[in-house]
Image 1 (spheres, one colour):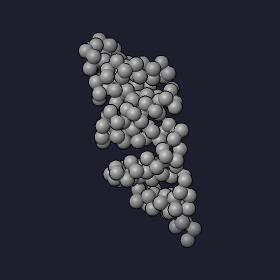
Image 2 (tube, helix red, strand yellow):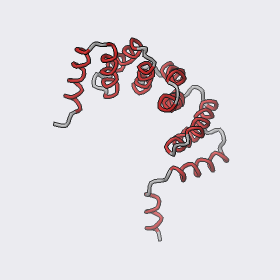
Image 3 (cartoon, helix red, strand yellow):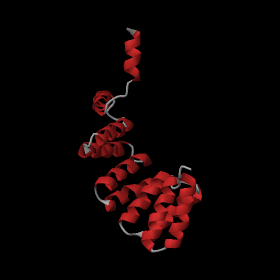
Image 4 (cartoon, one colour):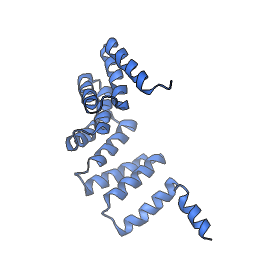
Length: 168
């Protein structure tokens, strides 16, 4: 009998189970911003973007100083909505945590989609100053250089990228 319980505990929770668990928890602790974020992520992975957005909004309402909440909402909007709207959240995330490479990468991606290439390049350069071999920063900078028509720089970064991340 205890083997069955251990086996069940080690099984991955489905998104539906996670949503049910977090919804139950939120009835007891309605001010838990991280539970809203986690449930929002489960909704997102289930393709329920409206529900995800509502939970991200609630998490931000409860804890407006948490940069990750803005990043998560901005990332959802960037991937499935408007780069311009996403940029608002991603900029707030970067203002709160100026050296977070993930936040800078997402903001650079939003700038790239909006054709604000110099701003995208500035974010990429900052990322690579923080960590010269950061995968996402280097990958984005290659795209930005190509969009700027700076093919030599793109090729140089592409060669570095291949050297770092190709399977030899």
